[in-house]
Length: 479
Image (tube, rainbow, N blue to C red; front, side, top):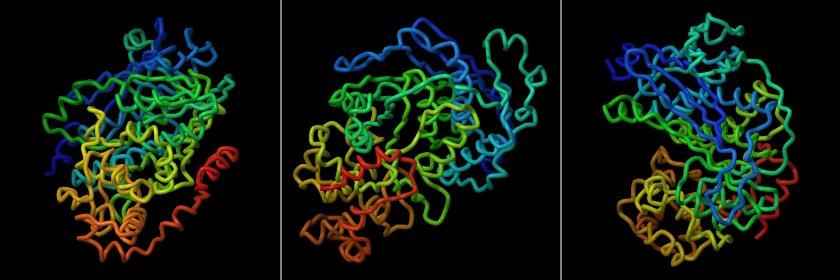
């Protein structure tokens, strides 16, 4: 019996017991309680400050008092749904067959939505753990998760109600009384969010990030707009990390879905009308060729549409979540970014070196960013950014083969399409560029059919970008 089947037989359900939303002196603290019966309980939390400033060059968000009473119900309901996506990290420990939601209730359509997100968002996790099940087989919601009337039948004791002060949600659409303006821009510290920040600098911007990350803060410190900075704190339960270390199931979860739900809460707190993400059309390409497995599933246009439709089932808020860069491919974003010279020394996208704020210079993400900038920056400048000439590294041979499409599957990283990498490398070789990897695979590179010029002129119409913002993107494409 596989570990997957053994664990889900032994631990057959996970329970979302309660969540609480407490308004403290200077922040909102959201506490969740999950349980895998017979194994462990988990109490992750979030902290959303009323006013927080980590950047001395940036003014403090004017939120020294809690949100208006009318807005609190919207926030509290959204916190329930944030808990549903937070639950994924704890669900994957044993992948139980049943999910029991006692903290609130889901409509049948919402339950189906969550099944799709869990299945597709855990696609990489299942692939790398050798798990082969259908969406229907992965799990089911218990009946009491779906009832629409709230009462004692949900299994929440009076003691739990008293301790957690939980507002139970019954699936109805909640009215949002707020009026909003300006942009809340999630920042990851890489080239994509920099491009979004720069092109929307005059839009009453609040930059948003989860937890203090050195590379993110350095990029925000360089931002020359009159903007505010907002940092939410996400605290994982250490007991989950301990179980992972003991050999329970572990792997990739859809982090961008966490960003989606949490950013909507922050947009209400800060009064922002738009949440412009920095996800490009390249994210739509699957990682495992010919399958649904995509490391970037929660960055895809499919998820973006699903999320905006889901939010409409929760609240009538006029806040709009969309990806500003969706009409573009990675290669076009790289071209625009290459002109933002003051960010070249500071931006970081490397997950391996994220804690140290460095490029590790030995992973597929570093290699991809190096390659995608090759047509637009001189080689000596790339070497200065990354510390060495990555195309000369033998250790990156496998990553190069996967990125360019010689091997079937792409690396499990947030990277662009195989055709973009091929076009960038063909451009490099045809202009006399030489390196260990491009010399080794020169015939495969020159056989690439895609034209760099055609890619740079492309525009994808499947997007939700407001017309005025789309015009800015089109202007930025002009070289």
